[in-house]
Image (cartoon, rainbow, N blue to C red):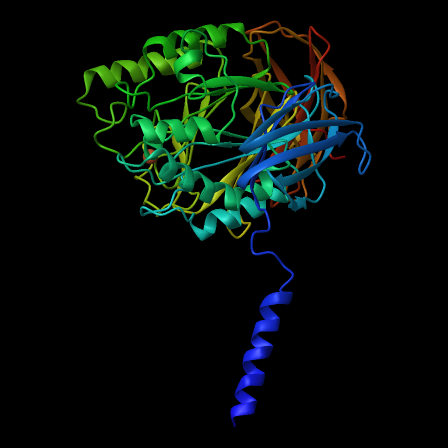
Amino acid sequence: MRLKLVTILAATAVMFLTASTPAWAIQAANVAVSVVEPAQAVLVVKTDVISDMTVDFGSSPGTYTATRTSNGLVRHEVTLDGLTPSGVVYYRVTVTESGNPANTATLAENSFRTTRPAGEAFSYAVGGDDRPDTDTVVQPLVWGTIVGQMASEGLDLVLTVGDIIYGLPGDSLERAAAKYDGFFAVTSQITGGVPLYPAVGNHERIAYAGSRSAFEREFTLPANNGAEAGTYGEEYYSFDNGDTHFISLCTELPGQEGLITGNQKTWLENDLAATDRTWIVVFMHRPLFSGLHPGDPWTNPLDPVGQQNKADIHSLLQQYGVDVVFQGHEHFYLHHQEDGIQYLITGGGGAPLHSPPPLAAGDIFSVAAFEHVKVDETRNTLQLTAIDQSGQTLEAFTIWALDINLVLDNVYWGSYTGYILRDLSVDYTLANDDAADISNIQVTGLDASGGVASITGTPFSVADLAAGQSTVITVDYMVSPGITSFSTFTYISCEDLDGNAYEFPGPYPG
Ligand SMILES: [Fe+2]
């Protein structure tokens, strides 16, 4: 018995001596492509120990034509420059523990795309309120599901509408940073290939020094907000991609919570006035319309300062032609339309769901669901699709760059002969409600449901319409006896004075 015991002890000792996998293998906690521009981008790499980092990159898979390095840090930021607009950049990261070259790791190759020129289509996604419900660094499971959906959508960028973490007023810089590490532990599956642009939520707690420093340290964002670039450079900002100008507003600036005022409001007006992009998309945390938080200045009807600010901000967005405003704070999906601006609440990122309020004036659709919104952008259209965590479409709609409207005016038998021949006439008013003149207008196709066929041949031309003008179009359908109702589908194409072509509601399917 004694001999056997000695043998076991000896074997245990040998196992310790030959253990070959170091417990200290270096981990890349976060890789995030950031501040992507036409010819450069910032690559952020964060490791669990102080490290040296090398990134090799180029325009073909596996072929690297440039190298950047950063040494002796936990969080590295390197600028990759000399890039091609709308070009795919392939890169490979190697991290090594500073002072311990044996502890090294090379990550799998990843890629991202630099920003598109105007006229080139791309897709992006919007989500938010992915914060945990308690004081933890662990993100809700469903946020991982949503990030996985985004990873399969072929996106150029992701916007989030705030409440990234569950911050507490007393959080130290390191405690708040650990919560962002928890966010990136899940979200890094997309941020290595798709830049993520956040808006600041109330749960980021930026009124408190530790939390604010952590937000500013853990995200690398555009800093272009003029007077406040030195103090709130990353809290609100704007950037371009394709035909869209994106604006991230901060509803949480200390002392201005729930408002857009002061320097930020001045900057917003200047920024809106300066853009020449077709689409203007704003994203921020608290909703201007349809909110439920009774104490919020924009939501509380008894708060005169808040209500005046709400009216001022909405009219500013309207004046400069903002198309879509993405918001969060309420943990549901809600589509509200106000004076032609689509206000979407997309707060179903993982925090406990709220029941949306009953639909009120201007509200179009709402649902309590874990969800995100995918946007397909072209020069002529924005297609928005709200998708739940199982992949089901909750709502989908399209908005057009030109404001052209077709309204059914009159349905009639044009004559007794027409009645006998079942030739039904339909009058539509085609209105150019845009500020641009349009020409080369054609009705490209006429379809109808229920076996009804158009008699009028297509395509046919319609007279040019200056801004604000309208005209009546009359077409005829063959409606067999017994048909009491049917739907018609009219396809129209036109051009603006710059020669851009538009198709409503899209190309005629034939
Ligand atoms: Fe919130």
